[in-house]
Image 1: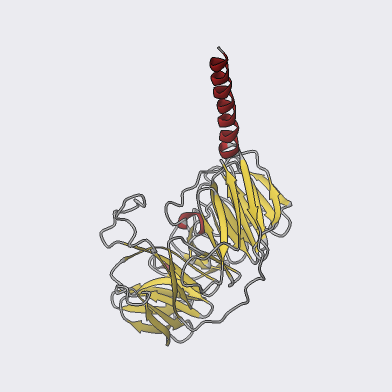
Image 2: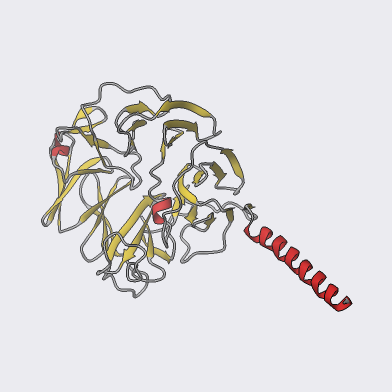
Length: 380
């Protein structure tokens, strides 16, 4: 009888212990690991490939690389590191999922599936501010590399020191520096795709001043097609109106009437056949570059082009003279791959490399990414 009681008691103790252990492992948790070493210095690298990683980096302040995972945001350095290094700082939240990441200066703004905004000081890894939200946010959609989360934060738009958040029924503008609500408006009908302009306009079906939330007048009739944007739809240099006419800074830009034209490094650029042409907004030809290439965007005064052989070419935005050229390969790697998502920031280009026969829009396919370290990083 005593043995039976002891066995029963032992089983009860094990059951209680398992419940407690399960709570510790599975219960809601938040773990913040702040930086313990000095902030990396700003380094100037000659143009060329600097590394390859298995996750997509958002280059912040030209000094750090910020990465996204399902339940975590983290940063490493130096920015020109050959691979992913031990995290300088990280924030892990569970069971919440990381929905979007963006940055302004040294402030990294994250949005989580419970709707909470958490801003992190990139220099220290400490939380700068946080704001709870009434509405939830989409779950993590970064797949293996996190690129869609750190390079395409569609629900977070930054302009002129304000981060604009698109919620179910509202648009909210927060001060990047403090997290204070600058303005709050009902989400207008038809406000699905949003973008910001280099002149601090936040637009969807209606255009607003991103800093005040006041409606902006004087724009051409929409719906608008943003042009010359960052991959996440921010800092757009121009737009096309409902009639397909181009505009830059509120002025007609006939050169942008060409649906294949974009704006990079302050000039209108188009690629057709075996020639790339740089034009003024009015349409005057400034320069031509002979060769077939895709226009990636601009970095300072350089227009970045990618050839079919995956060679990166930079040309001076004012003259068209080549300023850089190198294959996007680490060491002796092959350049036979298909470009995926990419981001130009902080003097660096980071790009996903996909298999040439990768299925369209299926990042979960085992043959989608080129290799384990599928992201190539280059200094510009």
